[in-house]
Length: 153
Image (cartoon, rainbow, N blue to C red):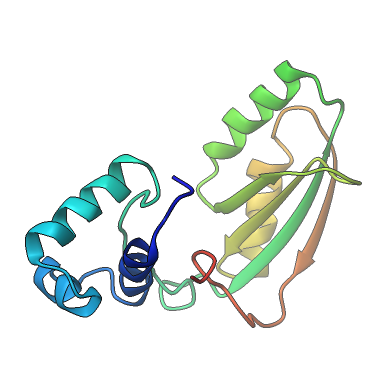
């Protein structure tokens, strides 16, 4: 849905600020009646512009104090190779983001770990066991500057 109007954009902006607000509050903030706002939300959800609602947790607060950026090279870029790798990486609970890349590495992962010993376990038990992996390069984040859930409107 690429033809968002100013009301749709306002709804999305308000929901990014507070996804838990009531429909009545949202409607008031964007200048619509509650029923019109509800219809707009329904369209935004059904069209996939709004892909879901969730609680954003602090990794540090739940014990994951280390974020690791992992670059992975595979043995090839065949469809079967990519499919098998992607199915396996989805099962790794510490991988919070995985991107198929162009360039030097095939994939970039963001991995949450409790500490260095925990990352060693993740590397040994999960990452090294992923199918078709020929190279793993790990970089440890020193400090988070920005972590937006999505692009701002």
